[in-house]
Structure formats: structure tokens, C-alpha cells
Image (cartoon, rainbow over all chains, first blue to last red; front, side):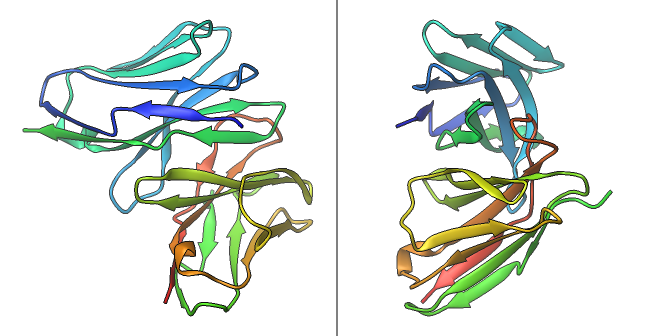
Length: 112
Length: 113
């Protein structure tokens, strides 16, 4: 079945450093790849997304890259800040299949 | 504009009982998806509804079921509860079928004792 693998499960960085989270998906029909941030005790919220016809997208300190051939995509956070500490989920969706598959999540700690 | 509302927020049930959770999507949103969140397992897809029809279902036993009403509100039901069903159940709404951003509710934390 469809699967999304996400690594690492835990990531600890020093404030100001960069953080990279990687995901691999199995369903080649996936065409939409969102990233959600879930702070402790709160609901997941979309932070950035990318579609299959785009290789890279950037929004201030956050960027996402997509390699469709290898079926993997990554989240890059630069100049990390303590408020970036949260659990990040990647997801893959085939918009014709109405089923979003999430990765297991990455707990990011940003040390001040 | 009100966000996605889930009720109740917390629930404690005993094994063997059944439970019904409710999700009211953002006004105008017609797609509702349900997820089970447990530590270490991330967000597991349960099912997705659009226009009162279940469009897809995850790999959960038949004890998990759901429905969607004409006003797009959705309910999920779990029968014969097991200890392993203890989790945070999240619903998310989207504007339309196959649409993009999903807006999550705060979730219902179910504890089975």
C-alpha cells in the first residue's frame, strides 16, 4: 500500500543552524506534498506545500524540494529559532485518490 | 470564520463500549478526513468523506466507521473499543474534493480503560 517514510524521527539543532527533514513516498501517482507543523498540544497546521510540477518552493526561512524521479522531498528550515521547535509531518496526496498519507513525524528541538 | 470544531475534546470509555465523535468543518468546506494520532505512529488515515460519500478508507478494522451529513458535518464511530484505540482523533476539512490545504480541528482525545 501507499507509504511515506520520514527521517529523522528526532532532530536537535542549535539556534541559528539549519534543519533538514526528508521524506520518501511510494505512490508514484502522488502529486501534492504538504508539510504540517504541530506544536505541543495544538493542531497540525500547514506551513508549506509543493506540487509535482515544481521542483522547489521557498517561503522566507522555509523551503521544500521535490525529486519526483527518486520519489523524495525535503523540508529545509534555515536560521532556526526556538519557536520552530515542534513536530513536523510530511504528507503525500494523490488528489484524485482522496487519501493523504502522512509520515510518522519529526520532533525538532531548537536549543537557544 | 469559525475553524474546524470537534466534540467532545476528551472522552474516557471502557473496553467493549462504543463511541461517536463529531466534526464540524469550516463553513463551505465539503471534504472531511479523519486521522488517528498516536505517539510514534504519526497521523494514520481513517477515511475521507465528500458530499455524504466515503471516498477512501484507511487500513483500520470494520469497528471504525463514519458518515457525513448533508451539512458536511461528520461523525466517526468506534464499536467494541479496545485499549489500543486510545489516541487523539483528528478531523480535517478541505474546501472541495481533491483540494489542497487541510484545516485540522483540535482533536478528540479518547482514552479506553
